[in-house]
Length: 261
Ligand code: ADP
Image 1: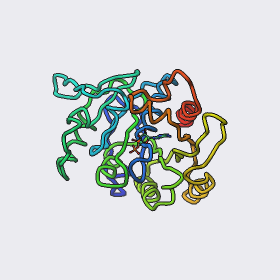
Image 2: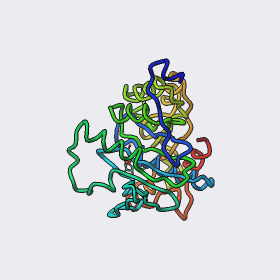
Image 3: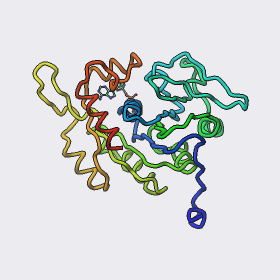
Image 4: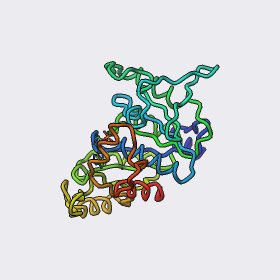
């Protein structure tokens, strides 16, 4: 009611979901989806019932990252989508509804319709935390989502390099404006630890830059994920690094992130 008085849109919860956490970034290619997946699996490891909703409509990567490519969700009797599950996590993605090689040429209304289907026509089974892999940036899809469903919080992913870009500030301001709590900033590709000598190098800039920026924006740094070959290789093979047999620095960093969220 308070929101209605202020002229803010009414938000409706997603059926079968307790908390919704958005994972967002200023631009593409910074590791947003990788973070979303490993955060989700980290939370599942903490005995939460977890779902992943991939609303990166133009570049869905959850089917690949969760090893659910070439599978199609079934419909229930009311034509609602039944999430696909792997590694104990329920997943729904635009990528399940279109073929990987199909060009996604929809614009405007069709994107909004797809978003509506992903938000309202999915049968989640008792999910404690739904991790939403957002599209990069601050376009219509992002704004629409933040206005339609109550987000418990947002996690912002950035590399030390792109933190300087205006896009990150714009993303943070978007969440502030619609009164979504920002859980914090994850610095991805924060440092590289040499597998041979354990020397740590800051390939994309020194972390103090990011710290300064985070402080200026009034948000906490809640994770630092190293740049590792393992993350890249395992992600491509559909095996999130958090599940790797050899628990390395990256898996520990993601688990710490899940605990802080
Ligand atoms: P986004 O969702 O921001 O577009 P992705 O999560 O798809 O980014 O990651 C982009 C690429 O970078 C992928 O190939 C992924 O495996 C790789 N990547 C992400 N984070 C790391 C990391 N910390 N170390 C190494 N490679 C990474």
